[in-house]
Image (cartoon, rainbow, N blue to C red; front, top):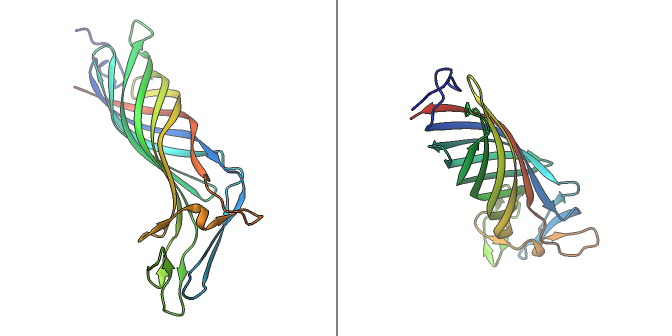
Length: 235
């Protein structure tokens, strides 16, 4: 097997493990309204109130890390990919894995065109406040007393997704560099207001400016753009 000068500074590995760091831009689909969270505890009449403005949320920047293995002339495996992002009071994190296929675009095997299919779990959340019951009777949610203190009530949007991506990889002396774009398909999706010990549908506690119940508030968008670097470790 012929080896050439490469990304480690020593040789161009035919098989290698790669550790990747990247920045990504994930599209977000939003109801695009200035909403309000409002929930009344039936035993005391205490009202939980919090702003829930999702106007203008169209994307979230994420930072990620991952590990992959390149096998032979064409195949690769994404063992794990995870990223975390924040935008306009909204948190977004995901974790997944996948497989891919690549071809070399030059004889020196330094430029590769890669196509990947990944399955990943996505979590989007928006904090809706912390609440204390000064009457010490406790808050009633879903017919259950969940205590006198509820910390960090959240709107949560969860989904199981498939991503189909294409990227270019350039193998340089110390690090590899890559950039790509992908399409996200949502296979399973659910949203909730999370009180930790229990949960309710958003339509029971989220309202628009006219007082109408609201749901289908935030979910993963259809695109992701990614750029990053990778360090190779030969096998």
